[in-house]
Amino acid sequence: MTYIHIDPKSGENEKFSNEKIADFLFENLDQFGDKKEFILKAIEYALNPEKGGMIILCLDSDKIIGAVVINETGMDGYIPSNILVYIAIHRNHRGKGIGKKLMLEVMPKTKGGIALHVEPDNPAKFLYEKLGFTNKYLEMRYQPE
Image 1: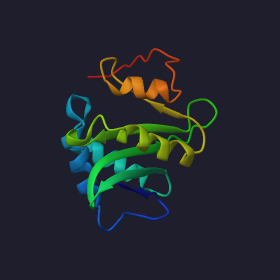
Image 2: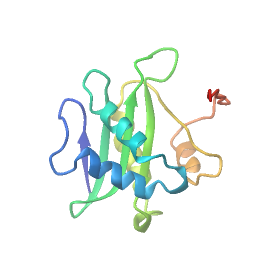
Image 3: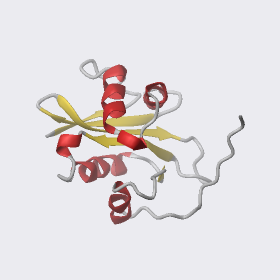
């Protein structure tokens, strides 16, 4: 397995277009995913040098088997500097530690803290806890109609 780090300074990787990365995430996020248009927005944000973030891909023979998208918040000090927007592992490769390896690739490359949202029934919750993530707040949302 190899890892590719795509960030705003390197630009879009020619082999792995935004669309290809979004397709992978859409297909492998299962019930924890979003519409493809939202996934593409997060990818575009991460690769925009004025906003910032990164994408790290895990490859097996040039095929994506894992992906993580981090967006910089620009709000250092009062909320974490980064938000883990998406992480997905191909269903045929789950349970092999790839999610943990992706997180260990991401964490030292970010400046400042990382926030993420995880459903209580998502099995990845235990991985995040093992890596030192804590549940500091109860999230509440207002969504106007």
